[in-house]
Image 1 (cartoon, rainbow over the protein chains, first blue to last red):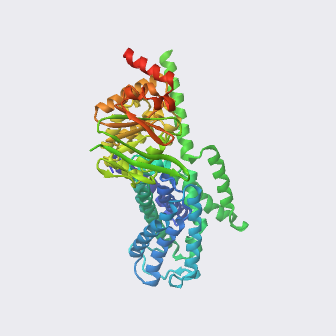
Image 2: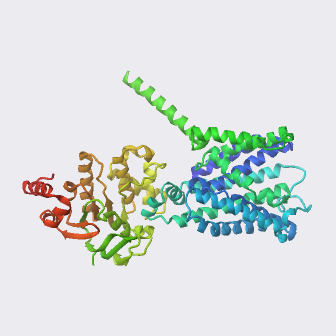
Image 3: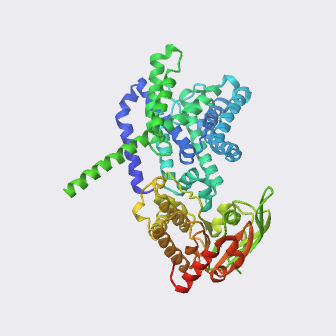
Amino acid sequence: MNKKDIYWYAFIAVLVAIPLIPAVAKNSFLGHVLILILLFASMSQSWNIIGGYGGQVSFGHSVFFGIGAYGAGMAVVKYGIMPWPGVLIGALTAAVVAVIISYPCFKLTGHYFAIATFAIVEIFNRLFMIWDWVGGALGLDYPLVEEGWKNFMWYETKIHYYYGALILFVLIFGIVRWIERNRIGYYLKAVREGQEAAESIGVNSTLVKLTAMAISAFLAALCGGFFAQYNLRVDPPMVMSLDMAMKFVLITILGGTGTVLGPLVGALILIPLQEYARALWGGLGGGVDLMIFGLLIIIIIVRQPRGIMGIISDVCSHVKKVKGIALETKGGG
Amino acid sequence: MSLLEVHNVTMKFGSLVANNDISFNVEEGQIVGLIGPNGAGKTTLFNCITGLYQPNEGSIVFNGTDITKLPPYKVARLGAVRTFQIVHPLKEMLVFDNVLVGAYLRERNTEKAGKIATKYIEKCYLSNVLNERVGGLTIGYKKRIELARALATEPKLLMLDESMAGLTSTEIKEFLELIKDLSNSGITLLVVEHVMEAIMPIADKVVVLDGGVKIAEDKPEAIIENKQVIKAYLGERYSKRLKAAKEAGTDV
């Protein structure tokens, strides 16, 4: 990472953090929404590595997310220790599981890969439902332990969760920005654009995809660990569901796959929509947010498959063109 | 030792024999033409050499290494790189990034790889479209991008599969200059080509396939006299035209 990038990140972090601190500190609903925005942006960004840059659309990321969440949960609930080693073990396990699952699945291309990952979520969901060691269908309920960073748990205020989410966000966005500008990122895009062409110039496409998948799963699991700590409980429908898996995919698609800012843009739209819709129309039986979101996705994708970031870049290049023409005519006149 | 040795390669698809017991060598520094009518098995042979197919029988040795069973990326890493008859551009990526992917094979560092990419972009006359998406460019550009991308891997053997098909005559002339230039810089070339006027004047040797069988292997002057080749592929008129051009001493 060069100097310019570090400045860019510091800038973004400060930009996001400072004006929002008072809002969070007041324990308001807005504070909760902001934390979820950062969390879901981070989750989608981890998906973006393999799904966006690598073009391998996975509907199975809630499995890795769930393994991370269970890592934290098991450490705190079953072993009565702090969540950190649990999260780390969970993340490593998620990376290993991702590689084992993906190796045969990568032999499938296009839609078949997506369908295979669908099935995997169901398998893991059922497995964790009947697995007594991890709490089965009841899940894991957190005991009351000492507040603070050591246990990553606070009761009175959400401000520390906000900082935690911000660190996670900066970490994952930093990693993806680094990937985008280095060999692995270019190789991933090359494999997405044409596996045969990439192999013809020496790219080991299987290795590139597996590496990306492992990183992606590792980071998704870190997000899962945070999610468990934030909710103070874990159960299979909460983390290892198709519903959750769809969020990884849809947020990124809405914002723009294969772009650094896409997941943030997507989360900035979906999460407030989801949380406020739930608060306002919760009485309607839920799902209103998903209906609005579904409609939004259809409208955006029909206009520009590269999502909102695609639309922005279209507008930018249009403006440039118009400016260019204006300059030319001025020069000519 | 030859740079590329093809020994008795046979490739079958079910009952169809696409390549039947084909053998030839490519010496270092040569330009070798591979010609023949449509369906003769030229592209199949290319696919066997580059690891896309594994031949049913026979072996292929590149630079002393048996590459018969190696996957395409390993063959490319050893230094035998191809272009495709139907171009395979990385559409959503910029021209520069396309070539950069090639350059990364020998150089991990992005800055240094970028310099290598820039060198071949200039060599292939692509500087003016550096920051454009490949998807929107014409076929002439796409073919040159594919060439630049292959060159950026700094290959020992470059295999071109009908790189001149579909180009205008001006573009063909530019392409030929480029090929001569590459050959002078020490790259060995194996070229599948239908444009006879293009390949005949520059090739050191021509291998002719017909119906999956090698029917001739000789210098271009001898190939245009070869009765079997004339019958199978060139035709009388073509042969005369090429000879006349040769005698007149002009590049056609």
